[in-house]
Every structure is written in C-alpha cells, then in structure tokens.
Image 1 (spheres, one colour):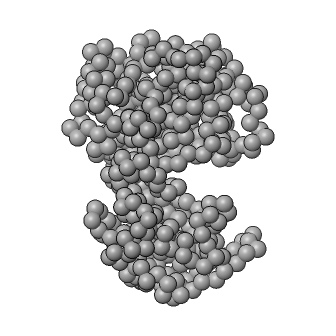
Image 2 (tube, rainbow, N blue to C red):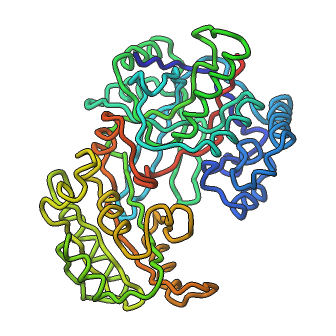
Length: 452
C-alpha cells in the first residue's frame, strides 16, 4: 500500500530574501563548479550552500563540509531566512515551459511525503542503477543536516486526473512563489491545507504504484538513512520522518509531462569514413542519407523523419551525423534483428532505442566497447541537439587530443513513459542516460525536515 502524508515544510521567507529566483537552484547533480559560483553570486542565501553540489573530489568530503551546511541551516531558521509551515500541507507544483519543438506546456504535480518501501515490495519502482559513491555523499548530508533539500520525482497512474482536480480546487491563491529557472520555465508553488482534501488525496493513493522518474540516488539515500536510524534507535514509530521521503508526484497521463531525448556523441578511436560506417551498419539497419540543406537543416529533417517513424510497434529509428564529412543518415532497424542478435535481453529492453544503439553499434565497432565508453571519455551525453552538434563539429579539429578519433553524433528519440513503466514493472534496469524528464524540479521551494 502506498502511504503519502502532508508535511510542514521549511521554506524561504520572502520578506528576508526578496527574490525567490535568487535563492533556488537546479538539482545538485547538474551543477558544475562554474554554475555553483554563479549561484552564490546571485544571493549568499542560495540553496547550493545547503544542498552541496557533488562537484568535489572525495578528499573534500570532510565532516566539516557537512557540519557547515547543518550549522547554516540552523542559523537561517533562527534568523527567519527560512520558516516552518504552520499546518501540514500538500504543495501544488506547476511548471510552464517550452519544449524544444516550440510547444508551450504546463506540467502539474504536487509535493508530499511518501512512506519508504524497499524496491522488492513493489510499491515504489525504479528503472535505473544507483552508485554507492553518489549515495555516500548524499547520506552524510542528510544525516548531518537532518533535512531533505531535493525531492524525488515520481510518477503515478491517474487517467482521469482525479488527484490534481481535488488539489486544485483547494489550492491557495496567489502562489507562494513564482520563479523562473535558467531555461525560462516558470515554477509555481501553491499551498493545500484543507484536512478533508488532504485525507481524500491520501485515500486515492492507497492502491497506486509509484515509478521513480528522476532521483533514484535520492530515494536510495533515504532508504539508507532509515536503515541507519534503525541501527541507532531500534524499530521506528510508523510516523517517524525517517520513514518518509519528499517526492514530487506527477500523473503519468498528465498532458504536460515530457521526456526529452539524450543524444550521444561517440569518439571512435582512429579514422572512419562515412562510407565504411554505412557498409557496416547496413547489416542491421536500413540506411538513408539526408542531403537537403545545411548542417542544421540536415539535423532538422532527420528529426522529422525520426518522429514520423516513432511509436509502439514501429522499428527503432535514429540519426547519425558524421561531422568530419558533414553527412547525415537516418538509420531504421530491420525487422527481427534484435530478436536474433539480442535474444538474451528481455523484450522490454530490446525495444529501447538506447539498447539498440549499444548492442548493435557501440559494442560492435572495432576498438570500442561499453566499458571503455563508461570508464573513459569516449561517450558524452547531450539533452540539447544544438550543443551536441556544436561539440561534434569542434571535435573534428581534435584540439588538445593526442589520440586520433572520428566523432560521431547519434540523434535519439525520447524514451516513452509507457516504456519506463514496463521496464520498472518487470524489475529491469535501463542503460545510463535513457530518460530525461523535463523540466527539472527546482531545489529550495520546499525543504523536508527530518525532525518534527
């Protein structure tokens, strides 16, 4: 049974900080050193001072680092920079944004506490693998600060949108906050405290399953923290905050839910002509060269043709751009290839574009394999096709590289939500960077305290 709970969030006091946009931050795992400095320059009370970025070497992960964040969290509450909500609440969280194709959308969800469940219980399901070096940093921060700064992003099924209808009727106006992120997306937070509505929403969730969309490491960290507290204190009261984690919950049928593709820039060792690549790929793919227009036009037409062939029951399609020769190709998987060449994989994985790419291309090109891609710098991921194209073109010049390479840009279709659900239902794991749910949730609109 899924148990969700309203909570009394800790959140920024506008009278003290002025502009909410100056203090919220992107998720910690997408902030580099330059981004961290930019956030601190905007406002000394920016969330990055609490939700420390992971952009630090292991030797820098000292007790002093985490204790400093905890002391600052305490100080900001004492000074009134951060305030505690008076009543338990759910927080409606809406985002207006523009997709890369230009379409304007609004994604609707809400923030809640969710009772933790081990993955084998089938209440909360995952589709990604987690890494211990990431969770160890987050666990120390969570344990020291006794607060969760960043929510887990999860999906649930609600075809008629009943949950959000209940919440929106009771949602306070005007919003507590309006904040634009660095991509121009507008984030709004609204308060729901009506006990009858809170209870009705809780009841709606009892028979639902939650699917983690983004934040697998955060959820795993919460499980580890609960185990740590149990070691120290014994069995916990069911209402203990250590038994819960903060989640942003969004209906998987929400018309504003978007999954964007993650394109791959492959640095193939040595020199490889496009004609030789095509000859190799024709064993598994129908290959069609795109010839109309300049460089950007080639990619635009390729994306159009990829989208036309996308959907359940249709063969995988993706694009291949060879920047060294300025040539672009549409690759369409031939019938029966994955059933023959990847029979060891479950059907739910065989239909994923990223699995087709890894099994039929990356694992089979000479001098290249998945392990070298993961351990080295041979594979880079981009959510922006324009940024990927720019980087691929620069790679042709080989600036600063001793090893001769052939850069190849693979243009991907997004993984569909129903594919995420199927993989999670079958307790399988997708390859790295298979999904990119957009926009990201801001850190700092609401904090989940672990001491009531």
